[in-house]
Length: 294
Image 1: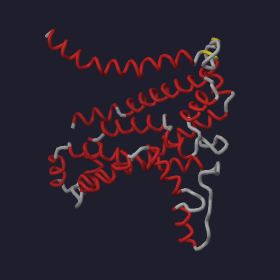
Image 2: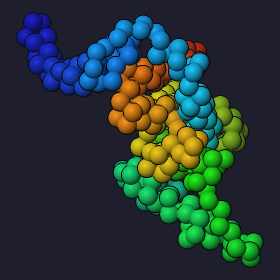
Image 3: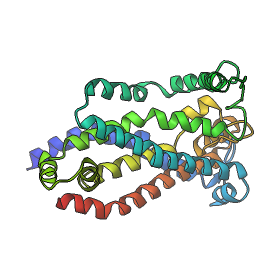
Image 4: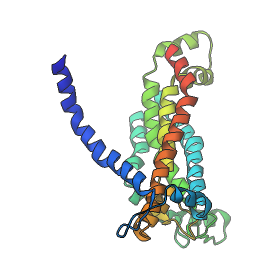
């Protein structure tokens, strides 16, 4: 028994060291810095929860950034995941070219977000962008709207590629989950005269509850800590209209030298992700129990 435990410890140790070094220690450090007024060079002045109070009472940009991240989260949950689930259901039924489509849908996931951002900048460009050219062709009138430089549409323009990029990621997880469901359930349903829609609603989706929970957590946490795509496309502008907490944190930490305040924002993102993950877990608890019974 001791030998087995020592073997387990040997294999777990490298991953544990990486987690502690690059995960736990920076998290604790950020939590400590968030309690101080600190510019990264001078004296650290302890102010308690002053940085957190400042975020919600004195910084309108942070409030807007949080609302933007919640908007992205909503788009991920109610647009991205349903599309991914629908595509997974179609592919899992054995359509022609199943492997081909499965690969094609997953390609955006493996492409760097920096590249994705540059691609969509070209699509939304006011002069030669594909979107404006398409609208011009359809309407027959010149259309040169500045999607990324208008405060009313800048952030929404980043939501579209953010949702599009990870549709294939969640689709593949749903696809694997559907493939793992026993065919006996569907055969029994067909004998009882159930339609395809009924089998999807009464069998596939309930049995996918654990998978849907996992994808929901991934979608929520990914949206709440979104950074690279938004930073590439708008940099948080114009007039701070497209900031999310991560881009605002980056500006405060590395451009303005507000290490204490930026650390508070970083720690807030972590807490926010943990709280939402806990809520999703609680919401899916009964559905998971029902799925395990089936």
